[in-house]
Amino acid sequence: MFQALPSKATVVEVGPRDGLQSEPEVVPTAAKIGLIDRLSEAGYRHIEITSFVNPRWVPQLADALAVAQGVRRRPGVTMSALVPNMRGLESALAADIDEVVIFAAASESFSQKNTNRSVAASLETYAEVVRGARAAGKRVRGYVSTAWDCPYEGAIDPVAVERVVHALLEMDIYQVSLGDTIGSTTPRRVQGLLERLLAKIPEPAIALHFHDTRGMGMANVVAGLDMGVTTYDSSLGGLGGCPYAPGATGNIASEDLLYMLREMGVETGIDLDKVIAASRFVADALGRALPGRYLRSHLARV
Image 1 (cartoon, rainbow, N blue to C red):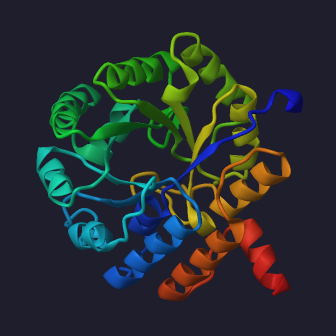
Image 2: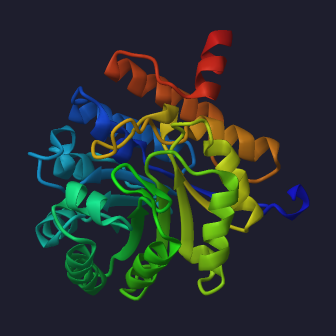
């Protein structure tokens, strides 16, 4: 299987949004800006920097406008933000965000918990958001949460996942990231869903977003690489989780992913040492060590 690995992969850094939104502490705006600037200096081409949601629901990201306006914009680096509705889109456009991200779910229960809407109603809202974003010249990326399992419903029928993925792509979204929201899937299940989707969808339109709750994150990435998928979301230091998925721990750690890809000969263009420096910076801001395995082993040696 390793003979067929792609030579290059894209890593989307989601730590500033998906990582920090789950932290009990509110990181100061200046520290968020400093973190994002360090990540762009590390060679990332795509960083998800914040979320334009109601601050009552996610107070950790209440400073979204200030963060988006304060970061250093670099040529070739896409700064994206999560947008749940038209009000959020107005704020994102006011901040001149480069790319809009929307999030749907394959599970009805999770959709209700996460957005207070059914899957169908959420897709109607996102269709309006996508039209507005595209009219403003912004690209749109999408998530499908609970692509394998739901904390409330258990295993999700692949037909339901396929239905939501196609609905999003039909809205003129360039890529959909499949989320293992509670970190429960395994390589065979990853490949089973990808076989179904890639039979009708070109590979660049699919990305993968794994959590490492049960230690399966890196194995699942290898399964995705074997299927030809080349875009992966990760969070520096393994920050993150999901407030609506009880027991779900962080995203796969960027350092773990970058180390594995480098050692397997898959190029990312990202400087691992600079990512480690960014993780140390945010760990200082949080006042605690981060859980990423490669990060911890590296710091133990210095």
